[in-house]
Structures are given as structure tokens and as C-alpha cells.
Image (tube, rainbow, N blue to C red; front, side, top):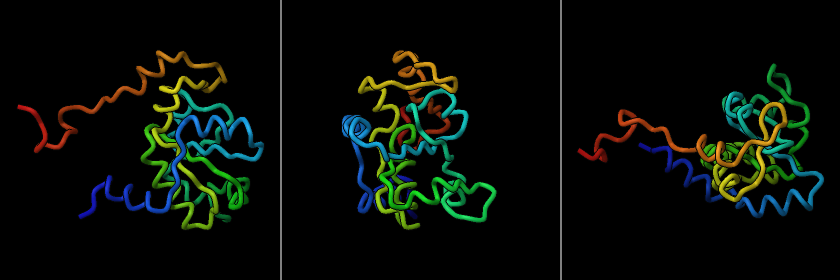
Length: 158
């Protein structure tokens, strides 16, 4: 049986990851860079990188193809564009980049460390109203909230 981390590691064989400082450089130098945030809408509305397009992971494949209610023409036609895929911590984005590569996207990359790392690098995030999010508020938001019941019983400390 494969675990979540196994799927990510398999995808990392073909997916390039960018560190936050690499993305900062690309944003300064590229006019045609597409930032694709694949988090859920409530996550995106709370905070995101300004200019990002939100396509939740659950509808990504349909958004990338014609003839679906979720189809986004700009995304379907972006197969030759540089795309940086963003999530909270850099795991979902690896899986999404792998999927998009399978669908013919030539330059789908993942933001390693996700928005958490972007915030740790002290780069700006905005909310749904385009107001800049306080870095300390973002840090609090990105803290893990895994409960005891959600942890592997074999690794729990008694």
C-alpha cells in the first residue's frame, strides 16, 4: 500500500520545485508566469499571493480541459506557460504539478514549502479584499492543528 508521502516522492522524480526566493526572482523577471493556488476557496480567501489564480485541487483536471462546467479557458490554453503551483506546505502542489505534466503542461512546477515557506521568507500575502495580511497572523494561521486522534497510533507518545 502506498502512503501519501510515497505518492509525493514518486511525483518528485519529475516535478521541479522552486524555493520561495526562486519564485520571488521569477515574479520580478517574468510577465507570463501563472501562479496557480490549488487550495480550497476558504483557504485562498484567507490569504494568498497577489495575482494567483485559485483552482481547488478537487477540480483541477476538469479546469484544465474543455467541455466541463469547471473549465477555465485561460488555464486550458496555458500548457506552454510557466506555471508555479501553490498550496499550504508544498505537498498538494507536487501532486498537482505531476498531474498537470501528465496532461501536457510543459512547465508546471511546485512551490517547495508552499505558502507557509513563502510567509517564513517574509513575502507578502493578501486576503480576499487584496489587503496585506500581517506576517504574524499568517504564521499563526499556518501552525499545525493536527489533533491526537489524527496522529498515527503507532507514533503517539503515551
